[in-house]
Length: 428
Image 1 (cartoon, helix red, strand yellow):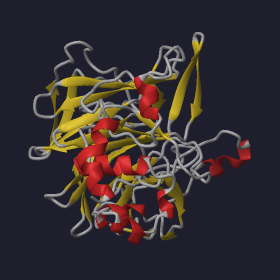
Image 2: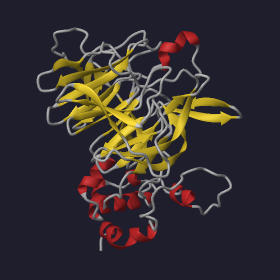
Image 3: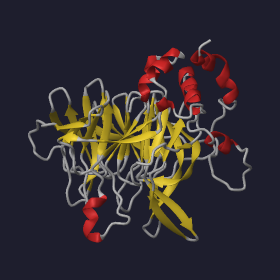
Image 4: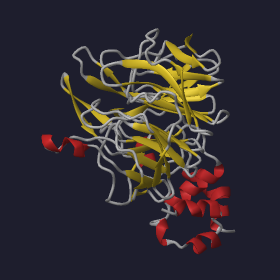
């Protein structure tokens, strides 16, 4: 029997005895014994148990610096790409523009190796609080700002071929030069039926909006379908959105003074071209999520998952949040999934086609007495939002028991029965 067949048929069940366990606390506690569940899972570089928040240790030393305000996306193999971000720590005041990272990184989720991609063509330059999407392994970027925040804004649409790092700028066809507006903190969503990207909300630095722009990828046209100057609803930035049944649902966000809650969720009706809201149902035990902005969001089937975020406390200081919530887009019910290892905001989240959520970077809140200290991080964490398929579990088991899979030739891997589709995941 070849190794791969052996892994999938008999070996992995004994290695993952808790595959049906959910909602683990994931809190670090030095008083826990060394054989706790957290220690068991953290022993392995990769984890295949659903709803376990697991920090990844990368295998190389050349890695992205800690940052916030960046975006990550996942390609069809689940590899992670990180673009842009900001970190002023350790920089002199006159060097503040250098705090903006004009760079693109790839994290291979199988080899656990970061690679900095050489960008070419016409890449975007305002790389903080922009919107980003991955469509057919192409990275689309719209909006954003630089340093100082709000002094400059972008309304351009850029696309990058992730396999090569080559960028080009779309020449959008519009009757108004200011469509889309030059905003940051907006959110993007892709409609495959219309082959269109919707850009929602955002700020110019002093005003917050609820406008909606439709960008047609077939002909490159940009159309304003809801005015950015309409003050019928509270404007916001650093919210997240999800498309479901011709509705664009908006989750969280706010202004410098306001954090938007979740007892009701606003949505933009694409048919009626107007904003409405639905009342939601709380978790029977934990109630509603805390109002927040600067959070992460991913969608899986008809569910939305909200990761971390921050709120403004009475003294005006952002405070991080340490939870993951699930929202059912059909029944409007909230469910608390688990706690994160630490509060985090201004991070970014992405989900692979197989249901693996990845969270990278952000600002950590560390409580010290009655005050909070913040620091940026470059930690990368994963959590399965559904039970992985058998092939994924076998692949993770195989990788966890290879000292360095990159030293095994592709022909050797195929000889022991590893399918070529998995072997191709090892290509940097």
